Length: 141
Picture 1: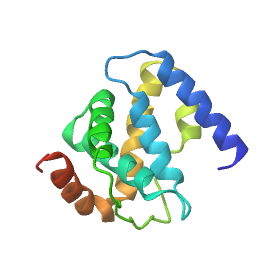
Picture 2: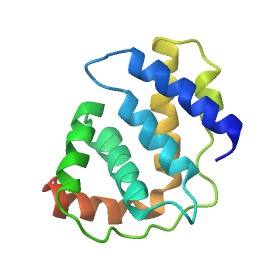
Picture 3: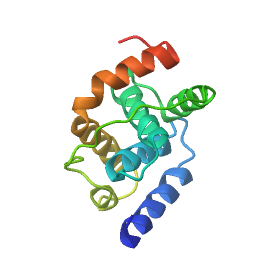
Protein backbone atom coordinates (compact mmCIF):
# COMPACT_ATOMS: atom_id res chain seq x y z
CA UNK A 1 0.00 0.00 0.00
CA UNK A 2 1.32 3.42 -0.95
CA UNK A 3 1.91 5.98 1.79
CA UNK A 4 -0.75 8.35 0.44
CA UNK A 5 -3.29 5.54 0.23
CA UNK A 6 -2.47 4.48 3.79
CA UNK A 7 -2.92 8.06 5.04
CA UNK A 8 -6.28 8.29 3.28
CA UNK A 9 -7.34 4.99 4.80
CA UNK A 10 -6.48 6.18 8.31
CA UNK A 11 -8.30 9.46 7.71
CA UNK A 12 -11.42 7.59 6.61
CA UNK A 13 -11.20 5.16 9.54
CA UNK A 14 -10.96 8.08 11.92
CA UNK A 15 -14.08 9.54 10.34
CA UNK A 16 -16.12 6.31 10.39
CA UNK A 17 -15.14 5.42 13.95
CA UNK A 18 -15.93 8.93 15.19
CA UNK A 19 -19.53 8.52 14.02
CA UNK A 20 -20.34 6.01 16.75
CA UNK A 21 -23.33 5.10 14.59
CA UNK A 22 -25.57 2.15 15.33
CA UNK A 23 -25.21 0.83 11.77
CA UNK A 24 -21.38 0.86 12.12
CA UNK A 25 -20.60 2.09 8.60
CA UNK A 26 -16.94 1.68 9.55
CA UNK A 27 -17.12 -2.05 8.71
CA UNK A 28 -18.30 -1.34 5.17
CA UNK A 29 -15.41 1.05 4.55
CA UNK A 30 -12.93 -1.53 5.87
CA UNK A 31 -14.37 -4.23 3.59
CA UNK A 32 -14.43 -2.00 0.49
CA UNK A 33 -10.85 -0.90 1.03
CA UNK A 34 -9.59 -4.43 1.67
CA UNK A 35 -11.24 -5.83 -1.46
CA UNK A 36 -10.16 -2.90 -3.62
CA UNK A 37 -6.51 -2.91 -2.56
CA UNK A 38 -5.95 -6.67 -2.26
CA UNK A 39 -3.01 -8.13 -4.13
CA UNK A 40 -1.25 -11.48 -4.48
CA UNK A 41 0.26 -11.04 -1.00
CA UNK A 42 -3.06 -10.41 0.74
CA UNK A 43 -4.13 -13.27 2.99
CA UNK A 44 -7.10 -15.25 1.70
CA UNK A 45 -9.01 -14.65 4.95
CA UNK A 46 -8.86 -10.87 4.38
CA UNK A 47 -10.21 -11.13 0.85
CA UNK A 48 -12.85 -13.68 1.87
CA UNK A 49 -14.11 -11.64 4.81
CA UNK A 50 -14.20 -8.40 2.81
CA UNK A 51 -16.20 -10.00 -0.01
CA UNK A 52 -18.56 -11.67 2.45
CA UNK A 53 -19.00 -8.32 4.16
CA UNK A 54 -19.81 -6.52 0.92
CA UNK A 55 -22.27 -9.24 -0.08
CA UNK A 56 -24.07 -9.21 3.27
CA UNK A 57 -24.24 -5.42 3.26
CA UNK A 58 -25.32 -4.82 -0.30
CA UNK A 59 -27.47 -7.86 -1.02
CA UNK A 60 -28.73 -8.86 2.44
CA UNK A 61 -28.96 -5.38 3.98
CA UNK A 62 -26.74 -6.22 6.94
CA UNK A 63 -25.53 -3.32 9.06
CA UNK A 64 -21.81 -3.02 9.66
CA UNK A 65 -22.35 -4.39 13.15
CA UNK A 66 -24.14 -7.45 11.72
CA UNK A 67 -21.33 -7.96 9.20
CA UNK A 68 -18.83 -7.75 12.04
CA UNK A 69 -20.78 -10.41 13.94
CA UNK A 70 -20.83 -12.62 10.82
CA UNK A 71 -17.05 -12.25 10.52
CA UNK A 72 -16.70 -13.26 14.17
CA UNK A 73 -18.85 -16.33 13.59
CA UNK A 74 -16.85 -17.32 10.52
CA UNK A 75 -13.55 -16.83 12.36
CA UNK A 76 -14.55 -19.55 14.83
CA UNK A 77 -14.13 -22.08 12.03
CA UNK A 78 -10.38 -22.13 11.55
CA UNK A 79 -9.90 -23.39 8.02
CA UNK A 80 -8.31 -22.79 4.68
CA UNK A 81 -10.29 -19.96 3.10
CA UNK A 82 -10.92 -19.95 -0.66
CA UNK A 83 -8.72 -18.17 -3.12
CA UNK A 84 -10.56 -15.59 -5.16
CA UNK A 85 -9.42 -14.32 -8.53
CA UNK A 86 -8.66 -10.64 -8.13
CA UNK A 87 -10.18 -8.55 -10.92
CA UNK A 88 -7.81 -6.15 -12.69
CA UNK A 89 -10.26 -3.26 -12.28
CA UNK A 90 -11.62 -2.91 -8.73
CA UNK A 91 -14.32 -0.31 -9.22
CA UNK A 92 -14.75 3.23 -10.46
CA UNK A 93 -14.88 4.80 -7.00
CA UNK A 94 -11.82 4.97 -4.76
CA UNK A 95 -11.07 6.09 -1.25
CA UNK A 96 -9.98 9.45 -2.70
CA UNK A 97 -13.47 9.92 -4.13
CA UNK A 98 -15.00 9.11 -0.74
CA UNK A 99 -12.81 11.62 1.05
CA UNK A 100 -13.46 14.30 -1.58
CA UNK A 101 -17.07 14.75 -0.42
CA UNK A 102 -17.99 16.55 2.81
CA UNK A 103 -18.36 14.52 6.01
CA UNK A 104 -21.88 13.56 6.94
CA UNK A 105 -24.67 12.19 4.80
CA UNK A 106 -22.80 12.92 1.52
CA UNK A 107 -19.74 10.97 2.60
CA UNK A 108 -21.80 8.14 4.07
CA UNK A 109 -23.68 7.89 0.76
CA UNK A 110 -20.38 7.85 -1.10
CA UNK A 111 -19.15 4.97 1.11
CA UNK A 112 -22.22 3.03 0.00
CA UNK A 113 -21.50 3.83 -3.66
CA UNK A 114 -17.87 2.82 -3.16
CA UNK A 115 -18.92 -0.52 -1.68
CA UNK A 116 -21.28 -1.11 -4.62
CA UNK A 117 -18.55 -0.23 -7.11
CA UNK A 118 -16.06 -2.65 -5.55
CA UNK A 119 -18.65 -5.43 -5.19
CA UNK A 120 -19.61 -5.04 -8.86
CA UNK A 121 -15.95 -5.38 -9.83
CA UNK A 122 -15.93 -8.79 -8.11
CA UNK A 123 -19.08 -9.99 -9.90
CA UNK A 124 -17.27 -13.11 -11.15
CA UNK A 125 -16.78 -14.15 -7.50
CA UNK A 126 -20.38 -13.54 -6.44
CA UNK A 127 -21.63 -17.14 -6.68
CA UNK A 128 -18.64 -18.44 -4.76
CA UNK A 129 -19.30 -15.88 -2.00
CA UNK A 130 -23.00 -16.81 -1.86
CA UNK A 131 -22.16 -20.50 -1.49
CA UNK A 132 -19.59 -19.77 1.20
CA UNK A 133 -22.07 -17.63 3.16
CA UNK A 134 -24.65 -20.40 2.95
CA UNK A 135 -22.21 -23.00 4.28
CA UNK A 136 -20.54 -20.82 6.92
CA UNK A 137 -23.49 -18.76 8.14
CA UNK A 138 -26.58 -20.54 6.87
CA UNK A 139 -27.70 -17.41 5.03
CA UNK A 140 -29.73 -18.36 1.96
CA UNK A 141 -29.96 -16.44 -1.30
